[in-house]
Each structure stands twice: as structure tokens, then as C-alpha cells.
Length: 286
Image 1 (cartoon, rainbow, N blue to C red):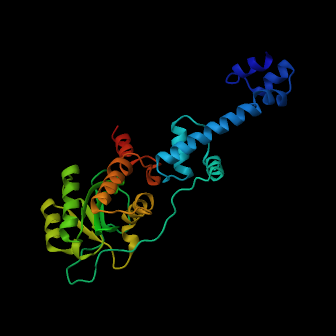
Image 2 (image 1 turned 180 degrees about the vertical axis):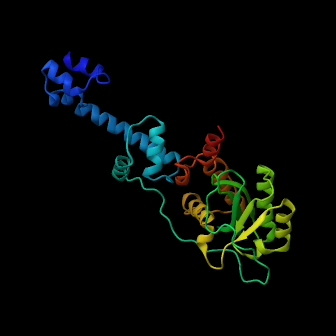
Image 3 (image 1 turned 90 degrees about the horizontal axis):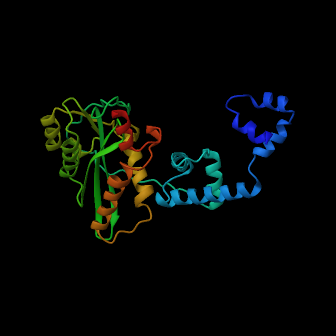
């Protein structure tokens, strides 16, 4: 009875003082509060089930930091180190990374724009700075090329386009989707590498029509477009790696699923305090 009363009063009186007044040992009180071995085991099993469920729901993409965030949102009081330990015990390991080659061709005689971004991948509001790049996917029908436009404010993919050819139309379609979705004002910086697709007269004319400022990476410096490199790395590791596409249509469906239903809306981003891009924008707009 004494222990039960003390527990009900912990927010009012210090434990040390209550133990002195009631003439009980603190060690005995804390031993009484500690869950019994059966309770601990049951809780551990429930935690393992929750970890396994979250890991599988994200198709093995999440490591312990993101799994721990999901658990906390569900009401679990558990830290990342414990989640990491349990994941190791359960044999749950996030998909491993591997390197991928660059795609665009920068050996051309077209004019290039200055680097207006200067590796500053931060923005204080939407539609201040966009970055763009091209990557590729292999299918049994041949290569499929993907152009992406990302808003650096929230890391949201605002535009993308797929084609079996790596042309200026590919990057123009991705930019057109982004403009249609976001309707940005003039003065927006749009950064890319100095590939011929981005340096083309048609692409540059499209930028000028909307009053956008073109920015390009320095030659051979992948860090100048690190945010896009990071997105492509996530796409390849979390969705593409290990997949075998019989047709281009299968690959297109996979890309759509990753960008539109997972990455933008569900995937926790470390740069956004582990919020998804959509959740980050919604919270900042509230």
C-alpha cells in the first residue's frame, strides 16, 4: 500500500522524502516499480513485433534511426541504441549501398551558367532553389532515363520525367511538371550539372520564359549537386537495387510508387528532422 501511494504522489513529492517519512527503503520501492521478468519479456516481444512490422512496411529501407522515430510516433518510449540492438538480434538490416555512375555528357561547346548555388543547399521558403539531374535504370528492353527536379526547401520531388532517350526534352518535361505543380515566381534558382541537356538552347529558353536563374555545377564536382546525388542514391538503394525489370513500363511504375507514394509522403528525411517532405511543408505552413 505504501509503495502504491508513493507512486501516485511522485509528481508531488520527492521519492527520497517519501521514503524517509514512510520509513521504507528507496531500493525496495524501485524494485517494486521495476517490471517483473515476465512483463519485461512480453514487452520485448511486443517491441520486436513492432520493429519487424515497421521494417517490413518500409520494405527494408529503414535503419534504426528512422525505425526509432516511427516507434516514438506510435507511443513507444525507446531510444535508437536499443532499436539498433534489437534489429541486429532480429537480423534486420537496411539495404546496403553501392556506387552508381554519372550519366550526363558535359563535353560540349554550349555555354554554361555560373554556379549560383555554391553548395548552399538550404532555403528559407519553397520555390527559392531547385536542383535537377538525370539518372538511369536498366530494363530487359534497354535503358530508361529519369530526370528529377527537387525543391531544396523541403527536399520534395516537384517534377520528374522518364524516357528511353536522354535528351533535352527529358529535362524540359521534368521542369514543366515542376512549374505546373508549384507555380513559382520569377527569380527561382534552378541548379543542375553542365550536361548538354541542361546547356541546350531549348532548355535555357524555357528557364528564361519563366524568369528563372540558371545555375550549374563546376566541371567534375559532384558535391555541387549533392542533394540530387543523395536522392538518386536513396532511389537506387531503396527501390531499384536488386530489381529486375522485364519492361520499361514496370520500371516506370516502380519509380512512380517510390517518388509519389513513398518518398514525398512517407519517407523520413534526416535533413528535415526526420519528417517526410510533405509533412515538413505542412508543419511549416501551419
